[in-house]
Image (tube, rainbow, N blue to C red):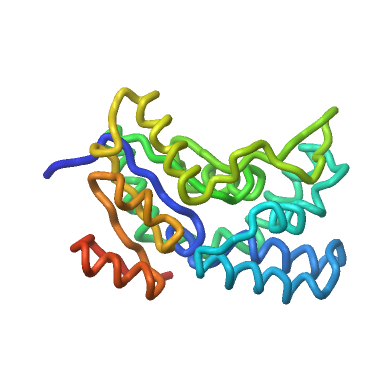
Length: 220
């Protein structure tokens, strides 16, 4: 069996049965830390994402608003509690099995996601993923500003980050695997030697079928 040198994963609806960023905003609404109408707003951004039309600057301003003025310690406490209460139970067993098999064969695994570091960290820790490559929120004088350190990891920026990581591992994208569910990751899937569409949305499913890519259907 031929194995890749590194295995990349998208996060939402790939290794998780939820969109952790959308649920995070609704969690903040439940706590009274975000306005109630943010529930509808975050669903609006999710719809745009599935269409491949995320307005990055607008979305970051909306999604990072509750980070402003808080310390790393405060946000880590909040996001770890959020993970335990709302995310851990949505980890796909099939995703964990791929990660465990990779670990058993000394193949590094990478969570490559547009989601910010502090929401993604507990997921990486729980699943024993080797490396986290997320979007990085901006921190000044120990507190979040509500901004981010460019690039926002989506589409071409995500691909470039993966290429840089392969270079650091002294391998190539042709020797990498990538698991993803969204048309936003088409460039990544086209570039790796081992593309896998997981629970793909209709637009990605069509692409996978035309290109003969493996399609996996993972469930809880």
